[in-house]
Length: 436
Image (cartoon, rainbow, N blue to C red; front, side, top):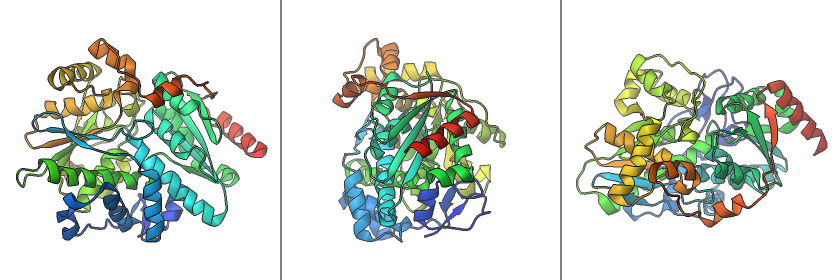
């Protein structure tokens, strides 16, 4: 399996190179040269398979170069938590992706990528530096996934004052090989600093840079697997006829939706998709107007989705050969307001007793707004306790803190604040390279 750049102005590379470089030399993202297929026999046997069996089989289609025993070991080391599919209401189901160490769906991709990267670096006996921009949950997932992983130093860039205190504490209290960088700006400013760094050959060579954002194919591929697992659970527990479910994905940088679409394209029986955004509605607008117009992000209650220029849209566009009409045959998109988000948290709690986080609430509200008649699986992306202020606004009470969140709150914050200025950031990164 080779991976090509979206712009196709760079030579295709193997997974190791795509993983270690993050983005292609032409500045665009890596995508599979050709999407493989799960066999009909494997799809029909999904209800009999375990989560780890499904992960290994699915990823082996993309990582042909990696020995099977190495892949199995990496999966065992990284994916140590359950991902259940639970019924919310009669035809609405939640895929609970927040059962990992940092209570967010991004634990899956971050932990797998950390172990895969360490595997390759160990073979080569070299070090690397990870840069990651975060609007909330990515930073904590990457920080914890890579914490004390050999051969790797991580810089987490996050927008000052624009994430929850719990999210901030999770990524700024580890120390060790994790460096937290508080940027005076938005998530888009953080993402721009990361992209500028990866395009700077002197920086790349000085620090052996790559990224752990979902722009890295090593973060994206593992996320395909839990949509295949969702179908296995659907078929085993809830399927009553041949109707295929719709998958709703709360969407910010659009990596999670891209993974879901890839899952369908490799043979997973999914009917279609609904991309649920917050007020950062550049993709719903693109679907309506046919022209993509990125803009600065605005802050919302579902802050991990506050992205005004989603990087992974380029992967979806490449998959559909930049034909927005073909994309719309598979994907619908809708924007949900903060008011609707609060209303959905309250409505869901009153109807079902479930407390859902604001990102999941965007997905549930979107499913209701579109009046989907088919069975609907909603990606439940984070634990509600990470968003106490929003839950308090919606329900008038807080959620009990899981022990890992309480422990994070009790630790000292360790971060360095910088302006959203590449010259300042570049100087700091190079200076740190000389003092390690």
